Length: 277
Ligand code: AMP
Image (cartoon, rainbow, N blue to C red; front, side, top):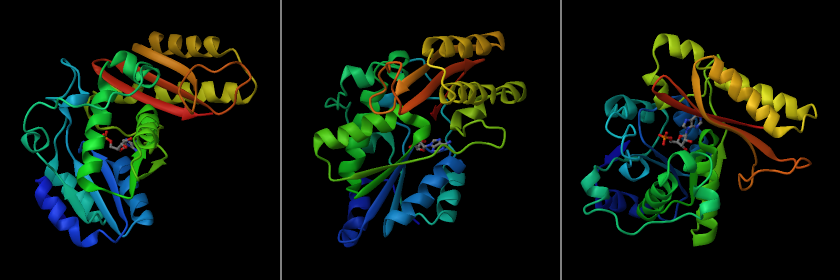
């Protein structure tokens, strides 16, 4: 695997591959099996697999965990080599943002103002902006994103369509630990006791999904019940929301194609998860 810290270096390295199919998997590093599943899937869609590791300041709010975000570059490289990744783009901040980024991709408020975007204002503007910039640098034919960040995939698919990027966006299922907890770099912040409690989030989502599948259409009742269970077990839920998959807006009672999304704090760690109905 070649590692490129500069845009110019990566472009030169990819130049001979321009007639081949290039798949791209952007990450913020601290790689786990969820990330590796994306790399493995990428290999099925392309001749060349390019990954990136970049902790993107633009998508963090002041007071969030940008500084503390786990950076484990050596271990990440070993995992990417094991997954057969061909090129790693690993820029530092000055390479990506030599001066403060002044041009941004601004997703519509219906997409960036709800759910994660309501609790992390500006997050999806930061995500869309860095992903557009990475797309311009790598110029892949295919890009892969995990459904773990369901709203992120929705924003990126819409951005690609509206901006006319010639890129196929593929989403992949959430990889979970044996006890159901969705793998996340932020799981590393949990104490042993919190780690034991953490799978409750996925269990509550499963309960909501099961209830909807068996005909319960009292969406707000289901959302509130799950929230109460979390609260009574020490969580601080931001939202538990049953939404339409396509645009993440609230569904009417007869709709199908739904997803249940959740974000909740356990101690000082904020976890997100979702399950499709
Ligand atoms: P991140 O490094 O958190 O920005 O994630 C990089 C990519 O990995 C994103 O497309 C995520 O949605 C995806 N990802 C993160 N966790 C998981 C998981 N548990 N299962 C599948 N994909 C994941």
